[in-house]
Length: 619
Image (tube, rainbow, N blue to C red; front, side):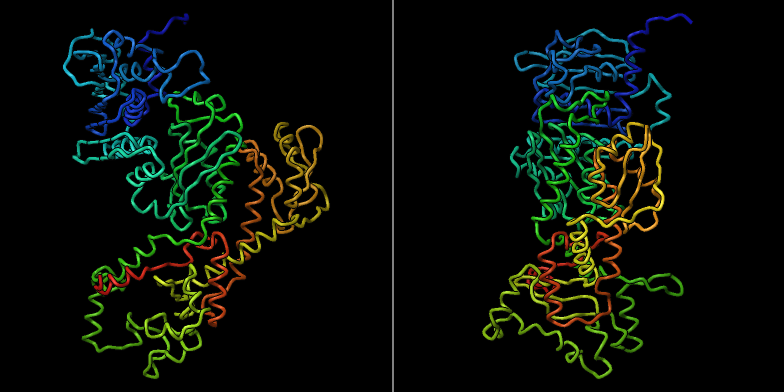
């Protein structure tokens, strides 16, 4: 078959396969164009999940009439001069509009600030129509209809309308976080509307925009990040460990204002939270990286969602170090959602418990209460019983609780008799221990709240942190292999491992080069016991290739320490004295990350006095 030149339409359709993956890709490209034009207001309207209609209207600078034909021509752009390494705009390739026009019906209507009228141009399946006069306000309106009508095979790969609409909403939210001073509205065919009012571009305004997108709970459950290293600035917010999600969809990352989905950044976030979150839980994050455009490559893929850093180790180290330092400096904090859940459980009609009935499988808490009233009240089976002990003697467990008395209650009548030590405990973050209930939960009082602590989960975290500190304070003990294990690897992997051999030896893994394309393992960490040396070394080689770190080995050792901590902590069912409970509370306050256990569950819940008073109708 002879070599021939492809038509311009065919070239654009090939490009569209990379740039325009789904309707959300179209929205992303058009909204980015609007922001590059200096828009303060961006309105998006969709129908049929974006397949039938996408309309993006902005109040930006507009496109002069004589440049409309260039705007839909391939590789024509106003955003890139001569240096591909100095990219300071969201778009720069000049591919989006011609690619969209090759697979859909596209029209552009625009008016500049100095023009008395607007002009319009259209392109349908690659066929361009002439520029004509139009009526419009200052700015640009881009309308895309019948997406992929010119390439119907692509339609088979689209998801349902709801899924495509959801992807569009996610794209708009992701972009909106980086531009808090811009007002965004998104309206769909299901009559749902997303409105994000403009805020100022200060840190407070940016946090307000984040709350608009990620929910009002996030600011109260987040920690500010602000760090600089070798010209790379990192800012934003990360959630406290007890405020986590089952997936990583609420992890937002930006490089010089550009939304990205980068493996290195995602891996750094996972590494920073490795000690405080289990593998199946994910932090909620909004991180902004600002650096010289010359040391980051955003021209990796036409979709511009991937980036490459000249010094990936620097960026990863900055993210991991900044997040871990922020978590350590934040002190002990409980997620506000825990108290909100407790409040909801206490509200009339909100509580229910699973009790299989003969016909309906479950019955409500109120139904159970009515049934218990008709059958005669048994306090030992009542869900409202104060304690399991004491009812047999007709009392409320005063004798049992006397052993846990931490002093007089902080009331107006008793305050005069309270000594300074007890008063000081009330002012601590977790307060003074007042009781232990169900042989596992410590009830403490602060000056303005009630705190409930899971003693097993809390002590598990304390033991783990102590073990971990001891583990990393000195070289990890190793065990010598009777015969060295020879691991065959690609030459580049063997070289990377050799470069990190000194660091690996501190973790108890002794390796050395063994000819071309192989390493010899002579010692392994004692804590690992019998381990698959071949797999361990290959995993380390892969991680070094990806991230230039040896965290895989460290994480394995930390997981063993976590298991040891779980078995060595205070078990549920152990009665504690008042001094023991208060000592546990003080250790928690002094230990970073003690708001969650090793498995990511909260170690305590705090209920403010104001919330308690609302429960009783006092407010």
